[in-house]
Length: 100
Image 1 (cartoon, rainbow, N blue to C red):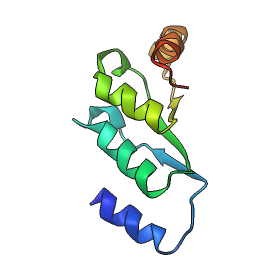
Image 2 (image 1 turned 30 degrees about the vertical axis):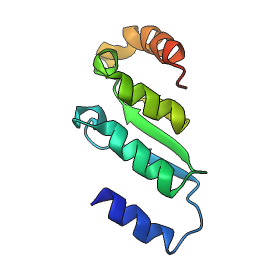
Image 3 (image 1 turned 180 degrees about the vertical axis):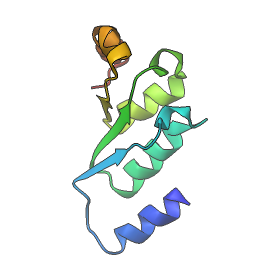
Image 4 (image 1 turned 120 degrees about the vertical axis):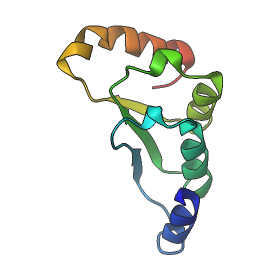
């Protein structure tokens, strides 16, 4: 499991500078906030980032945004040409939710 793997890493490393959740579209997972919570619990000082194309951000539950705020997550947008026009809206949504 993700939690087991991170705990195993923690036995070898005091901290990890940056953790990026990516691959496919991480927001397709039914509970992406669970990954955020685990990563932050195991490596609380890491720079935690989610790489997303942003298409699902408007539909994310409050629990996702709360987890992102707790863990000080940064959302990195992998911009596809069709999403380039929406970038400003996505950045504004993140700002309203208190997430970088």
